[in-house]
Length: 252
Image 1 (cartoon, helix red, strand yellow):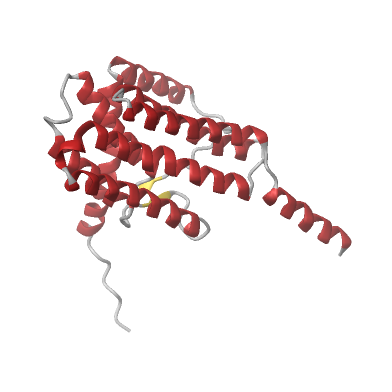
Image 2 (tube, one colour; image 1 turned 30 degrees about the horizontal axis):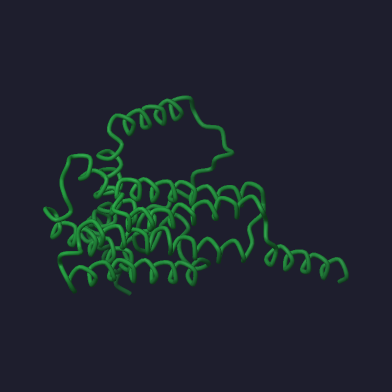
């Protein structure tokens, strides 16, 4: 019993502990989100959009690092959620508002708030359902993907010299679409089944190299199309499920 109690105490200590390495990545992601907000308020929209993508990369690393180094903790999970709300909830909504929604009056801030509230609800639902949902799929569009869709739209339109005023109603539709997708019950592949420590065939590394070359050709356009495709994948999976014939119930 003494040994069992000691193990329980060690597990409880790990849950309450604060580990430096994964939380450094979370802090960096939080800073990137804060930087995006500041740059959006200063009308430097391209910097803000790029900062949101950087936050997304850092957010993906902190969880991986915590699992690889066995430094998961309750503190880290809560800190990561708060960081995500800033980087993928507040920052994209302010970016879109400052870029395209200012001249729309109440409709502008209403559309931005739908996105922000959707991100908050999505993160709260993820935290409460983390132990009961299928690990292979997310329930609703993940907030980093929604943020990448919004930031990617701003980035690619700036790259093609469109102003937010010209595209304000398209921006409203995209922002509301992203916000509602986050609180939907659609399934999105989580990529959590990919094992980084497992050996892979050479062709997989080659395909990754081709993918990075593809993105590097035109980062704003290709990243936007990539995340637009991911956002639509949940709706495609729903349509395929609806079209699949139901298995008849055998008679007793």
